[in-house]
Image (cartoon, rainbow, N blue to C red; front, side, top):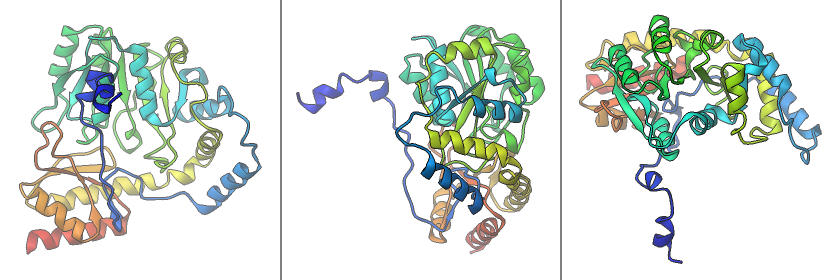
Length: 356
């Protein structure tokens, strides 16, 4: 069979999508993926390495990672039966789509937002209906409420703090959405440790709320791929049916437990990142560009010299993210908040660019 004929057998909705792609570049200062700039201490890594050497590799991990769920419940403030653990929060979002989406019934998304949501929605055959942020990249609550009035049982997926804009839904807005909507309200809160209202506390009150979170950002575990979702126990019990068995390996499960046991040490950098975010926003606001408020570990800017600035930073060994292909984000760059020295070099590079 020829390859073109084979490709016609692939889901047409998948073939119609652009792949989520990130070009690999080797640079000294990497500010393009919203990573936490602080690595784990070596003694914790060595303790994990000893466990991996001693643990039999020919045996499956626990079918249900009960100890990890207990620790996660203590961290998030929920009971263990409210939690599913996964291979990054992206897997949790895909599992949620498989569980709650229906073919031909669009999922409500607020654009611009994380590209993967749309890809997942198309992949499961649901598609998506777009509600746009306002002109200042804030959530447009009236438009959201209008969308859920049109589609009262459709899942709505909201990222707060939102990637790539950094905007948030406050508690009153989230409660208004949840109390109005009869469908599932999925809140991706990968960045919530850096700012914004944590919706986890709503799970006990509203059974249609499901929250996804990650170890990638606040816990500096982007390379580990650990995520989880939180929902009411009856909902979690049903979603568990579609979750792949043994979806996290023994290494991931152990590292997640270690992260929670050492959470004070691993999350100590959050305060510095928040302080650095404020300092970066104040600096960027002195330059001839638009700077948008952020409750995450990144900052969105807009300049009509976007490509020149991107290339100048790259020439200085600093990589930021070009997000200008997103809806509404023409001429926009997203800059992750780095360590203080990285941010100092970023400022120097940008000053040179705008003063030359």
